[in-house]
Image (tube, rainbow, N blue to C red; front, side, top):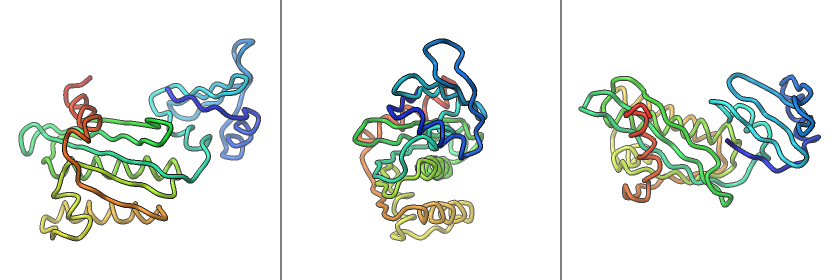
Amino acid sequence: MPVIECDVDDARERLTDAGVAVESGNTDHERWRASRGDATAVAYDDKVVIQGGEPRVLESILREGGGRAHVYFDGGARGNPGPAGIGWVIVTSEGIVAEGSKRIGRATNNQAEYEALIAALEAARDYDYDEIHVRGDSELIVKQVRGEYNTNNPELRERRVTVHELLRAFDEWTLEHVPREVNSRADELANEALDGA
C-alpha cells in the first residue's frame, strides 16, 4: 500500500488534471478520496494512501516525475514450456516503490523472462523515471537485449523489439546480468505467482 507524503491540495489538482474524479472523504480524518480502476487514493493532512489491486494507476499521477530507479525482473516456468509466472521490483533511494507478479499461462523460461522485463519496463515508464538501471539473472535475455547474442527464435525476437521500444521512454538506461541472490525479491515474486500466493 503506497504512502506518498505530499501537499494534498497539489495532489488533488494533479488527479483532477488527469481526469480522475475526486470526492469528499468518508471520515473526519480524510480530506478527499479518488478512484480509478482498482485503486483508491485517500488523502489525510500531509499524505495520500493508495489502496487496491493496481495502485500504480494513481501513484504514477501523484509521484513527481523523473529521477532514477533500479528495476529488477525475473520470470520462470515449471517445465519448459509449462505454467509460468513473472515478478518485478522498482527500487529507489526511498526503498521499494512498486512490485508486481502474475501468472502468464504456458511459456518457456526465456519467454517468461522477457514478459517479466516488459512488465517491469512498463511500470517504470508509468512512474515516469528519466533513468533506469535494469537487472535480471537471465544472462541470455540481458545479452540478447544488449545485442551481444543473436535472437533466432521469432517469439523472443518480437519480445526483444518490444523491450527496445519501451527503453526509448527513458533518457538513460542500463541492463545488467546479476546473480540470482541479487535478484531474490523478483525471483520470490515470480515463484509466488506460480504458487498462486
